[in-house]
Amino acid sequence: MPVYTVSNVQNLRICVVMVGLPARGKSFISQKIVRYLSWLSIKSKSFNVGNYRRQTGPPQPNAEFFDAKNKEAYKIRQQAVTKAVEDMMNWFVAEQGVVAILDATNSTRERRDWILRLCRENGIEPMFLESWCDDQELVLRNITDVKQTSPDYVGVDPEVAKRDFLERIAKYEEVYEPLDDNIDRDLTFVRLINVAQQVIINKIETYLESRVVFYVMNLHIKPRCIWLSRHGESVYNIEKKIGGDSSLSPRGLQYAKKLPDLVRQSAGDADLTVWTSTLIRTQETAQFLPYKQLQWKALDELDAGVCDGMTYEEIEEKYPEDFKARDEDKYEYRYRGGESYRDVVIRLEPIIMELERQENILIITHQAVLRCIYAYFMNVPQEESPWMSIPLHTLIRLEPRAYGTKVTRIKADIPAVSTYKEKGTSRVGEALTEATKSRHVLTNPSND
Ligand SMILES: Nc1ncnc2c1ncn2[C@@H]1O[C@H](COP(=O)(O)OP(=O)(O)OP(=O)(O)O)[C@@H](O)[C@H]1O
Image 1 (cartoon, rainbow, N blue to C red):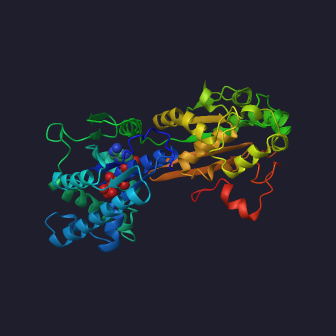
Image 2: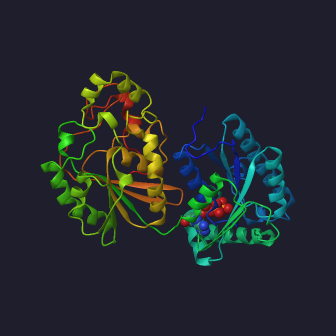
């Protein structure tokens, strides 16, 4: 049985139908929604019609291909969307999907009516999400950012690609019918105008739809970075105890003193805001940073309940069944009187929402919390995220990009104990076996 963190009592299935001219951020928004909902354990998937079209159509079509009067090409494009919709409908059934995103221009009312009909026939709630943008500079930036390097233009001179893409947009403009407050008043829709300068919402009826709306309203596309760090080594870390509210060890304090330099090296003169938990070790780590600081209860470490203050060896001895159960399903296991990783994700949701709204933030928090935040940005699956190794005395820089996040790790070069516990043992330490190495080391294809 799938478990939902957001109420899905009515067994809702939603199809978010993207609407918008090319280079309006539809794929960007689709991928972000999928990442956000998946992080919340809501089964979601995006179906990009462009990818389907590339499978059957010409590999590098020019703008003429997107002319609505081009009958031959129209047939290929229609086949692509039909196949995407067919796969989407099958996915709802086979995978018990909850939110599918049909990522295409869906630029005419005729096309949207067709999707609407199919959704209704299949008991799926359609929700239209239009990204409308008349900021030509932004559109040009988007083209440079992602379109010139799209598979449609491999090996094509960037200037030629840009001109062709502008022509492609013009072809779509000839037939484009934006959502209309009056004509479409019976539909469930959201219109994002010039990113989220203005947001129009219409007939949002379910809780899940309203969550999606709230999320997309908070997105921005200004360049920014997020820095993550665990607190410096603490007294409890040295004693191999979990939880508690201990102070930093002498080496942890050394890290705190070095942190302002590390941050400056990475952030330059950018004005950051530092977020810490309410626990002593994160505040001591942040004490020398010359930036505004905010404490969040939500950033406190995973609550180990009755095991708080114990070593893993003690837990294994005193609560052997719990110890085993946690190893078997670390994401779902909830400490007696404490929390599971799933619980932490739920309480971190406002943090993620605020992170989406903000620009440059440095978060100093704890191992489990950091794993959950990292998992959101890096799309790490739930079965892997609790096993990621996030060493002490390391600053992580995340740079959100159009379709992913770039990670850079900056080591402070100050020794610290390892608090990593491998599956099946109560010992802590980074003695990784080959079998588990790839699973839990913080990795990412775009790592520096
Ligand atoms: N709401 C928005 N309005 C305009 N641009 C946006 C918006 N959201 C994201 N972007 C920008 O759009 C770019 C990504 O474009 P994307 O590929 O998602 O466009 P698209 O609408 O899916 O285009 P296409 O129809 O060609 O597939 C990124 O550079 C991103 O910063």
